[in-house]
Amino acid sequence: MTRRIAGLLAALMISTALLAGCAGDKSGKTGSTERSQELVYATAKDINDMDPHLYTGSMPAQGMVYESLVENTEDGIKPLLAESWETSNDGKTYTFHLRKDVTFHDGEPFNAEAVKKNIEAVQKNASKHSWIKLSAKIVSCHVPDEFTVELNLSEPYYPTLLELSMTRPYVFISPKNFVNGETKDGVNGYNGTGPYRLTEHKTDQYATFEANENYWGGAPKVKKVTAKVLPAGEMTFLALQKGEVNFIFTDDRGADSIDVEAMNRLVESGDFQLVRSKAMNTKMIVANSGKSGPVHETAVREAIWYSVDRETVSKQIFSGMETAANSLFSSNVPYADVDLKKRGYDPETAKKILEEAGWSLESGKTVRTKDGNPLAMKLYYDVNSSSQKTQAEFLQHALTAIGAKLDLIGEESSSIAKRRATGDYDLLFNQTWGLAYDPQSTIAAFTSEASYLHTTKGIPKAAELYKKIGDVMVFADEKTRRSLYADILTLVHDEGVFIPITNGSVTVLAPKNLKGISFKQTQYELPFERMYFE
Image 1: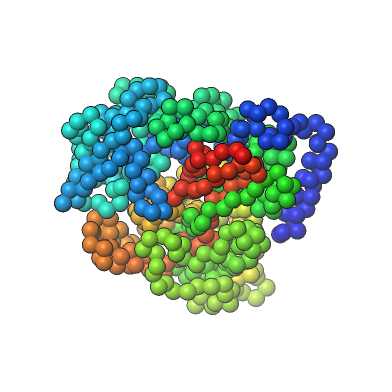
Image 2: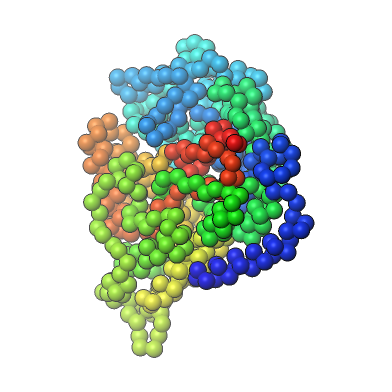
């Protein structure tokens, strides 16, 4: 497998050498000062509709333009557009005191009325936001004065501040961009309060973001950031070689623009640096327990789990840049320190589990059967992710060894998301929401039809699972909350509906002279405003 990747890279190197004479100047090395101070990042998909209250837009792009009341940091929730806040004794009212030095990109003042209008616009489309439980808890939003906002909930909800800090939907766009007083049917512009403003967009080609010189946090030093749409793989690799783009990072659905070996070769050239965040999420295989067929059985899911050699995936496919994962959440996720059943790489145990479950392998056959039905499944992967394809091939080979047939189907990420929502899948790649969202958001998504309802609804204790999820979100007592999370994580772990592969990080490939590269508590956006060229 690694030889195949190496062969591809060798071919790319030859192609690059032949093209060198007409490649032009490399960004950051020669050319105008303005060009050398610009970041151009490759993205496999267009930024799409940048309405911050909907979900079709690119999250990295929206993160540059829009902001929330509070920010989730490694040290907890911190002020952002709200300077401070208080919570009522009953836990149902949050009072936010806003910054007084903020304006939208179009010059409109950011104040309590703007906050109220935005929150009410989100709530008018509440069914769209069912994945975020806060949307079902908000009763009203009041404005005591110009820079004070009261948010009233129907009941205490401990993740309130966490969910207000997310990239969407509770972020703020200029009320002038509303259409008929709402945002659910589209907006007429994209003016936020963030460090960058969208200045040009050519669909499926590029989008340009320029520094907000009036930004309340100080004007960014990198004055222009461009998102250039390129197919993942060879095209992106060559664009980096030629200086057409100079920055790549893991995108908001976990697809990688080029593989690890290609990134390492670019670093060895001396023009680039590689920067990685700590563990942000868990990359996994999601099994549809709600669909009839082999994956409906706990035994089959458990056999798949035992068939995955995670250490080899980590070392050979990711060159150690992602670490082996043995549970749904990495150890740095709150409430994830739970003692769970150990399932390592053990194909013999996998075979034994299948035999005991009635999946027999007849002499001379390669695929097990049960009641005349073959042990055959389909795995969907993102065609824009070279690592997912390689992992899929690796898993296909591993399952062949235990008598299972795995068909691989590559599709666009939007198509896979649709399958997840409709339940039209056996197995597919996905990832947890990440540090800024977990465990509450991934776990809340177990009950959402748009996310993981089909994954969880077929297990015997589904009703018990859903009740515990409802309880954990409202219990204020820390001890009770921790106990409920332990029960939830144990239940889905024992059922094997989320089969972990690796703990993923945000990986950035950037010009060597770019400084200030850092990460947020989310894999969905980067703080471009903190970066600068030396």
